[in-house]
Length: 147
Ligand SMILES: [Zn+2]
Image: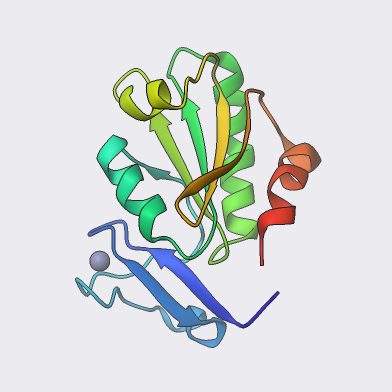
């Protein structure tokens, strides 16, 4: 791992907070809105605009799960995404876009099947796979992109 500054997205205002790893255990608050900051890497539900804002500004990779409520494999992947986010909290942001409600980004990316997992880094799509990746496969998909 390079450096020790971690990045957490505030669930209240969407602000990105950078902090040294040493502060994580102190119950940090969002520097922008003052709400308590979630530091366990829980997946964040986003719409198209929210996703665009996040990937444009995030200094850490963003893994996006394009999913839908009726999709069985998506349900199977969900707990693995929670675990992944927790394992890499501060070094990766896990986001979910419900493609039944928010179709713009999925259409722009020509997403044909769900779940489709996409990784953004530096505002660009750097990796994608239309498959229900779990466990070690999911870890292997993400790991090379983490600092
Ligand atoms: Zn905030």
